[in-house]
Amino acid sequence: MMESLYVVGQSPLHRLPAWFKLAALIGAGAGLFMLRDPRWLAVAFAAAAALVGSTGVAAAAVWRQVRGLLWVLLAVALFTGWFQGWVEALAVVLRIGAMVGLALAVTLATRTSDLIAVCERALMPFERIGLADAGKVALALALALRFVPEIWRNFQEIREAQAARGLGAHPVALIVPLIVLTLKRAQEVAEAIDARSP
Image (cartoon, rainbow, N blue to C red; front, side):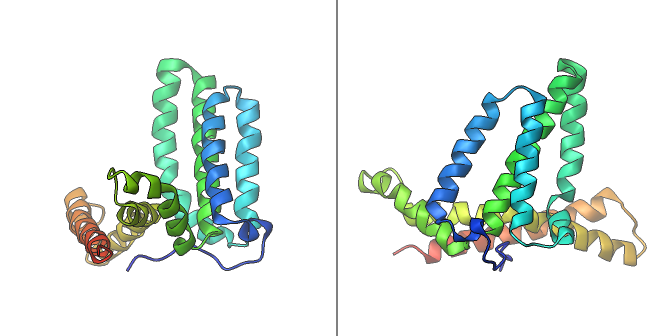
């Protein structure tokens, strides 16, 4: 099974109800897209970093979760800077960083079971009119919250194993096992969702 990102703690963020944290996360995400000034986005990024720190998780553990994002941010910054200017690139990077920080803080400070319960309650009106299965959708969302970090950890493990065999960083030797393992994890997710069906 995939590892939960939740960290036991007594911080103010831990004590907030899950529904409030998710609602605040949605509102903050919408607000970040309205901000254009890099100075305000830098404040938002700093606030997100402070929230992550308030959960009590070790800096090394946070680094393991976010280091893979650095390459994505670098690519986004170069692309945006080339076509829209470096001020806009800075704004985009800060916006993404703040969003990821806020999402990580909520995930670290909220039990997965609580996230599932909140999502399920929010989707119940759609289930009543036959548009969605609230239980399945809520479970899929909760599992998706930790699927990306799981893939990154798998990539790291595969890279270390291949290096030990003397294969170095050959793309095929890295990508093929990663795809196979990711598909296996996806199958586990599908089985977990099916098992929840009545």
